[in-house]
Amino acid sequence: MSTLWDRVRQLEGATLAPLHHDKPFTVFSVLEDSVRLLPQDGTGSERSVRRDQIEHIAGLGVSREELRQRAAREFPGNQNTSYIAAIASAVAQADPTRTVPAPPIEPRDEWERQLLALASDCGVSLSDEALSREALYD
Image 1 (cartoon, rainbow, N blue to C red):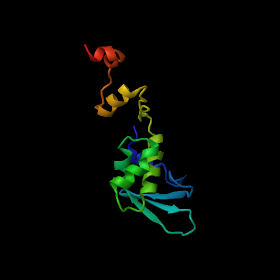
Image 2: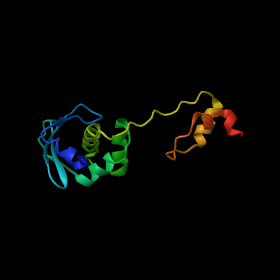
Image 3: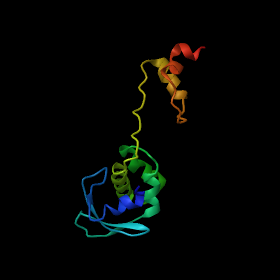
Image 4: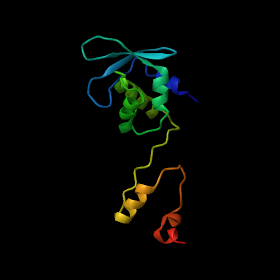
């Protein structure tokens, strides 16, 4: 079973695109503590992304769309959050054990909207019977 960092190592030499713009970058070196990359924006300025930041964001289990936003919140002021998110997304796609989060529940009426507003995700799946309106009053 490959570790997350093993999957990051497999990205060496790959060209990836950040999640929010079309300026690709090349992963040219994967070290023990960081990834070195080169944006293909014509500036030629090499960047380095820390291993702990990539592992943290990849381990959150959030959707691809949320990765960059979470990276920006987790590491405020970091200029590399787009790259962190792109690398985390690439290794998550290569992870055969990764589960895809369920789509959000869309309320059918005002009552369900209010009920869902009060709910919190505790990681437990309940049966349809337990969630029916009738069962709530039993």
